[in-house]
Length: 630
Image (cartoon, rainbow, N blue to C red):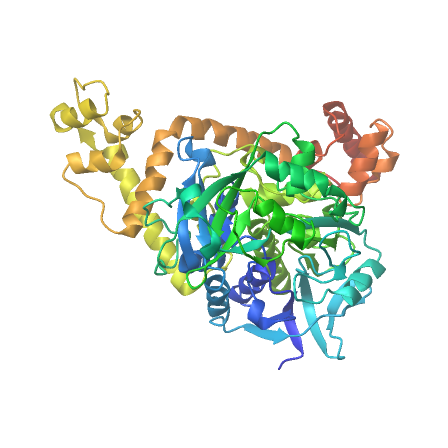
């Protein structure tokens, strides 16, 4: 066992696994240290990956060489493309996964990385000297030195589980001890700390569900892959089911509200507004006649079902009672109790865009420690933190994604610029350039960035080359091929589209509503064969159909990049800039934005403040004769 590493990653959840994988792929000797190696990549809550916005993040993590997409493909037991009836900018791939197969796939990928070591233990303290991290210490006194450390502790920092009106029990998650010493050590470094809470619903025995009373929901018949680089065999598929919680459930919840840990006063942390407990739903939406509940399979080798939509901190007897008010669950047997968990997080305005702490060099935070919620948000932060930690060791330029380049750029910019007042979750509405940031073009957007920074394996590099070559071939065909009217007369009639009177480019025909790219190719005697060609065709078809809109969005993004060219020094004396409003001075001093564009996104900074900021910076530059901004 080595005692010194380029990168040490603390924690083996979704953020930690991606951080360790990224730094090892980048050629830096890495150690992943976690309390239980058998739980690396564990799906602590819903065994599902993706959804609206989240599915794009999973694809972006994959495009950067991450393991989430490959592990999802290897474990998915149902796939659906959400929002398909809407525009492609908001399409969201989502997979229900086998809870046991997913972490096995994660572990398999990690153990293939030659520069990655795994070690099972807690981390009790960080070694920090003169404002720089130097390594970690375990409870048993082991010391591992490091040039950089990535902390991905999830809900373990002073984690406390609440079930019913009791005081709660210390735990990082069910059955695992919390991290108390590390939490105290981080706070002792002078970092600002706060509390959030999240929760999970009960699980039930599917053999006790009356499936005649619930609606079956099958997945899409699709060969879709989350991973652009690996071709994992897809497991056998399973259905989900939908039912509804109505007035009977509402009555039981209201009668027992004070027995809830949340409403009984035992939880002080703020919970996620967009994933509320059933208690929150009943209190906040008293006029709603019913609430949707999904019954989702936990895996192929179990009858256990996840009761999505019923997160709760009510006592076990009440949880069973409320479930038995739901159609189809009248005789249900509960296998696991739902609970709420409260934990420490560190407000992310303390981070740079690289996810490095501003006040401690070489120390990075990723995942729920930054106030986010969700596997995908954690994985996205993990891969960016791991990349930047490795690049710092290599002495190379940092890796920062813009808001027009990736949802990951939106996620991290929101965190460090706007901060959080509740657990942060990504939505398509948070992105200004949704049409640029589609799930289908993630490999083209980010694959070359990853390749050029040395973040892909040789196999990933080759898969990316083949994918882009296929897309380029199809783009060339559609843009350069002229189609005679007679070749597509029947196709256009079936699509209820106007007839041609002269030859036109295939790309022009493709922009017509209801004209399908595959059918155009077929009309010209060409076919799409193989998974690679099918995926490339989807990306090319969307790009060409929305080409005009995409062009305008890229022009808007370019204007934003021009604004980002006005760089702000990290040591600007914002509190002395009296031409700015008092609120703007305080917000700017707290966030310390890197550019004028980032400053513009800080709540409380007005357009007038931005204009005055430019003048103040130029005045300071002139008086000091130094380059503070450009």
